[in-house]
Length: 346
Length: 87
Ligand SMILES: [Zn+2]
Image 1 (cartoon, rainbow over the protein chains, first blue to last red):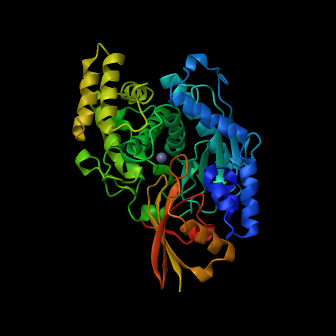
Image 2 (tube, chains in turn brown, blue; image 1 turned 120 degrees about the vertical axis):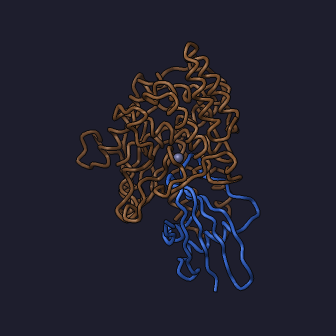
Image 3 (cartoon, rainbow over the protein chains, first blue to last red; image 1 turned 60 degrees about the vertical axis):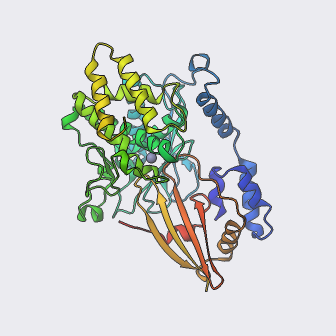
């Protein structure tokens, strides 16, 4: 079972502690030993680079761009939990629709960030974007492991293949962007902000792909992966930025600050900043990525965004960004202010 | 008889899950791994990244019960597999 550690996510000290545990069978310890030995240098370099960017030890201007356009790769886990899996040749032309979707959607998310926000990949330096598909058997999840995106096939009942949802792909990539910018931790209010950034940019990407205005957008997350058994019970999505507490959400959320859950799952508390964004975009009108999205992006990538940030401090950054980016449009500032006031964050 | 009660949270869906398995349904490797994970007072670090599952596992035996939080990358697959989504 410890072969799962081959993905090198487990902290070295934990691996070493388990390695020295005489109660573990020899086979398990041998597997662990191999994992420790194989911890790749590139991963450590990438983690160090991310930490340096977050710590603002060097500016992007002084850092060499890796590529003008990031490479996009897809790996097939072949229904195992071994990451990253076997490389898929020419994923954009693959007969495996999951591989093709992972490639195409990731390509489109790259274009979204480039066109709307002038960002070059997750790290703004053209970092290669790797997606692992067919993870595990009937795996009802997708995740970002600090290095790349991973997608399950779903069980076909509650959930369908997670690459089917363009907003899910954008959600996972946004976790990477957050990691390389504000570095919001995954607990408390910062955890809620971390999850919210992924939903907000995920929903915006979905709208951008369809060129939808505020009123045409569905504001749902994960509508395209809801399986027949979940639909039969009235579920339409994972979350809804317009109505976070709705019964049609598989994961209904609180959306007023007074209902914030101390120590709660980031997927619960993200409902509050999610709805603030929705209300701000509603008050502005038009296409969400043109104004509200630019304000949110400026706040997320601001040097003043910090890893343990609270909702109130992030809201302040968005207000500052609204004034800076749209000095001749006070309505944008008012809309942003209205958005946060609407969820009780003032 | 010793058994394990597993509660799962996290994941992009934020959908909770629950399962239960008897110790004698596990192979020796998994039993020893769990013994090691239950040993020691230090909290196991969470997995890096986002949308990973976290498991709260309670070991129940005649001598009492003990609960530990186990990240997705460390949970024995037999335990992860017995968890059912709670919709
Ligand atoms: Zn997420």
